[in-house]
Image 1 (spheres, helix red, strand yellow):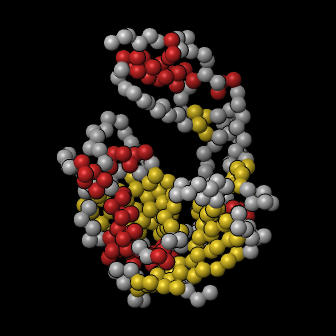
Image 2: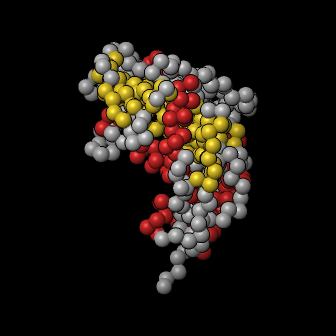
Image 3: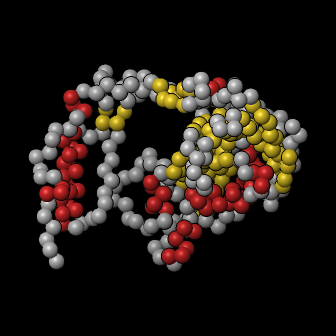
Length: 315
């Protein structure tokens, strides 16, 4: 089908090509590629207006990834198309007033946000320097009805909270990401109820810079070299350590120190690495990643009285 196009405020020509994929073919090939390539697969069989949809959404070989951690934001190209995109986006993003520093170096855009001020009006809280400053700039640049299927997809981390509240940290936060997103310029939408699959491909051009003739290539993601334990699940807490934290929280709640606490522990799979697979009727499931339970994985019963036995003094 002939591409449709529009121009952004900075003069980027965006071309969208729409095509249909035979429903019988499904998206199984994309699932297999996701074992070794970057991409996304979102699946939902539930329909609820304005909240859930029955679409399966998939994309492989994104040209660009956006990673934010603390005040640092990186737009890293994942192929030649991503390098072109960064050259197109550099004059769009550089003038933003929330940057403390900004550079385009070796194909990647790297920026440092200004520190969060100590005081600001409550109604300006969500407009302080954060990764959302970048996302708002991108949305304003590409906003158009034809861009409805152009997607930034990924994960948002809990540490985003620190971009909106000037909290003085006491513990190190190394390795924690605020967000990690892929720009998906070749994306599939499968509707199981209507039994059809739509594919949307996007190209970007300004002057001599264009993605039109560039291949949508993807590097192979290297498997983790981290060794799994011979049996059981490796955790960053022993059962006794975790239960001790639970008891600390329960005692603090009895005193009224806090209303809600979410305790966190990390478990690693032993056995094979989980992979996505699909059945003949298109349903998606996780294969592999076998968890081998041992007696050490089950914490011992607590000797403390259960929470509901605690007496609440009458006012």
